[in-house]
Amino acid sequence: MDTPHKTAATIAEIIASVPAFVVSQMARAHALVNTPDQQQDILDAMPDFGVTPAQALTLYATMKGALSSIGLAGNLPEADLTIFVPKPDGSVTYVAPPAPAPEPES
Image (cartoon, helix red, strand yellow):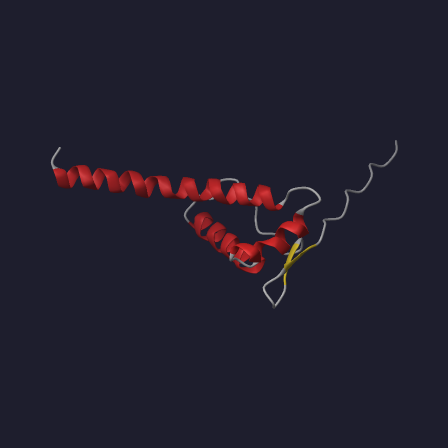
């Protein structure tokens, strides 16, 4: 194979691997921010590392939408704005989902 074809093959491999890498990192971030009993502390610490929680939430939702539109989002959960509530100052408040209703007794 000549050099242009080798280079093109390398580029094609890179392009093909990007969505899977992005999805895996998004799934990882989603799992981390949902660490039980630490959600708000994690959100509050994010600005210490150069990103506001609202920026992270917006990026996640945008990337999820883009990946979904081309059929590559896999099983990534939606950004739930009823649980992660953005505020105008860039912060996000974690609102725990309601506990499941108890099963009716038979």
